[in-house]
Every structure is written in structure tokens, then in C-alpha cells.
Image 1 (cartoon, rainbow, N blue to C red):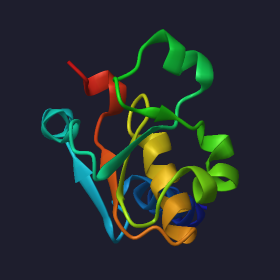
Image 2: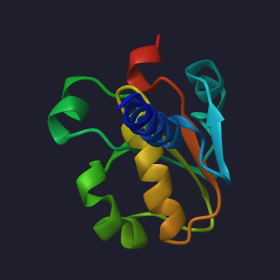
Image 3: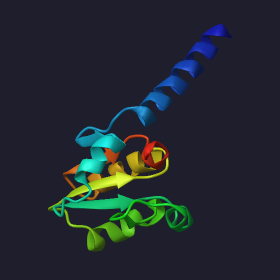
Image 4: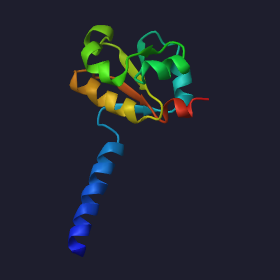
Length: 120
């Protein structure tokens, strides 16, 4: 019985680590580093929070594309030639969005660690 508990615990840890670990080929920046990038016209800024969250508070220059719509609109709303900087509330949805963008063929993707919760 104890052996089964170890297997369940190991599987749980594996899945948690897989969700938290960085994605190969995706850069990560802090909100402090983001502030230095906001005026760069060669970059695209995407907020993947819901429309309501975005309306409540957002960073000027970010385009709101909710995570659940990203796969459908990324190809027409974003350029694969420019870097895409992705933010959400805590950094988890933007990490998932980074995976979506990678699968769609985007090469230069940056996730904002800590998301809007870390924005000051």
C-alpha cells in the first residue's frame, strides 16, 4: 500500500513540475525588464487574460487576446516575424499561451514572470 502512495506522489510531482518548468525556446522576463521593452515597435505585446480582467487593469500597448481565443486569432492578429511578449495575471496562463504560440510556429516568444500581479 505504501508503495502505491509513492507512485501516486511521484506522478503528482512530475505533472506539477512539468507545468511549472520553463518551456524550451521561450524567454522569461520580469516586469522590471518588461518596462524597458514597452516602447519597442519591433515587439508585440499580448495580454491573455479575459476581457473583463483586461478592462479592469492593463498595461498600455498590450493587445487583449484571451487564452481561449489565442489559437484561433494568433495567425491573423500577430506576426511570426516579431517577438511576442505574453502576460496574464500570475504567469501561468501566459506560459500556456507561450506553448500555444510555439505550436503555431512562432519562434520568438517571451513570458512575463509573475504577470500583472508583479506589475508595479
